[in-house]
Length: 65
Image 1 (cartoon, rainbow, N blue to C red):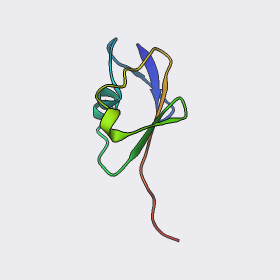
Image 2 (cartoon, rainbow, N blue to C red):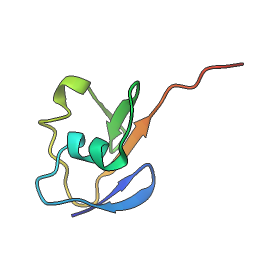
Image 3 (cartoon, rainbow, N blue to C red):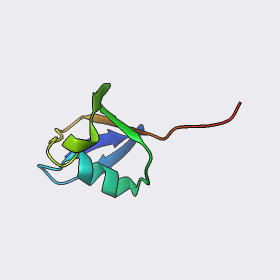
């Protein structure tokens, strides 16, 4: 299936989860995840199944002033 991760097209196998998307990006904590602009709690990463065309945003906090 084709999804967008941080606005970049990616192909993942059917049935892929948010955890698979995070692994594909090799994201390192801390970060927050939203699928189609809806926040996904980290306890649900492994069970939240993605669908073709989903938009996943993996957002890291930024510090500074």
